Image (cartoon, rainbow, N blue to C red; front, side, top):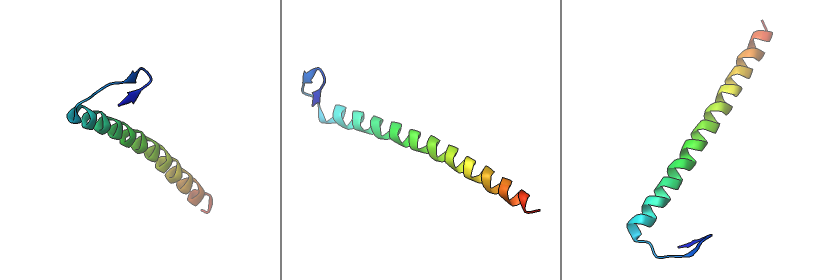
Length: 53
């Protein structure tokens, strides 16, 4: 595995664990961003629908 500190050997289990950890972090960030975006879209849709009344 290549890092900013150079090459070093890691086991397959260590590599897979690190990769899964990165994927979980990416999924958590995506979920947070999608939640914020969805909440904003819902709020705007409710606000615009109230303007028609």
